[in-house]
Image 1 (tube, helix red, strand yellow):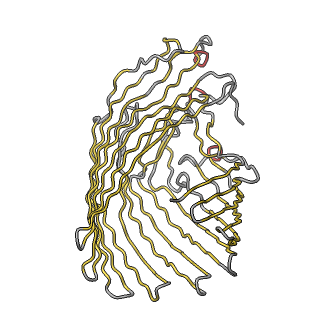
Image 2 (cartoon, rainbow, N blue to C red; image 1 turned 90 degrees about the vertical axis):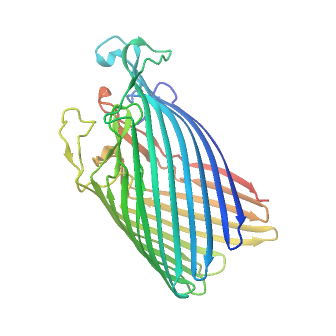
Length: 446
């Protein structure tokens, strides 16, 4: 399944800092949340999926981001409120380097710099938001909220396709490029929320909500494609949360309907991922959480979910099929990374000791087929699979520890996959989920 004459590498570094402060204003609370995050990664892998090593793929990205949020919250009689403002600043530099052998284009087996899209993306965002919760009675609560978002994206991109300069070493021969329709785009969105919640008794609640969501647009690094548009959706949800039988049975259940506009879809094009906008998509389904404690210490739990997804009015050519450049109607196809059926079952038994509590737990997870492209091709998907996990946990006043075995049966499953560049015959490349993994975690709480 995997053929390389060198070990692929995946080097990642990340760190972050956050600070939270609260101030009592007398009748209201002012909260400040500040955060900084840095990440840096470099991935080296085969470009064509064979042991011949006719191409080497390097992915690299370095990013830093800063955010600041201010909130004021309080109560006035039966009204609970929160208002706030948010600011975000991010800089991301990255790209792809794909040196390959001239043998792929009928020449000698000499490596050249090849394909090198790279660039820097700048993103600034600001938002104001608020929410009101009004208790009409002890049983009925009405909620209304809103958020106004503003985002600005700027791209500084470069591109090279070099069949002359030898590799190695890496030499940056890329030249500046411009995106169609410009290198700056601004997105704005108003997203409201409405909810009603009814509690016939303290341990039982029914609710229904409608809200609008927003996911900003942006640019693909190292591409001349125009900016992809922001994605929006209206989300409708109804459900219940309840505890029964003196707390021994807990049930949470919900049904939902999502209506997407300009949904963003990732697509591989010549060993780089680009984002397209589908016209629309519909997602609806149901999910539940059930926990039963028949006797003290023994617990059973189940989390089933059913999901229906489909694209609406979406046409796109398949980049892995160079002999058919006509757009394909993808209406009715499943969304990517969206299993129709998923299920998790678990059982655990806990007992107390003089200095803490021990818990022995096992669980089983099932997931239906998942597609990694909107073309819903089986060769670029993960087939249905079942996995088992086991845990032995200890929790004391300060110390915690866990012995665990994940993927107990050592099942091989695909984490993600794509059809690689047509220069290499569009082989399916991807990554695998972790094999059987075991270890110990130890923690200390002050």
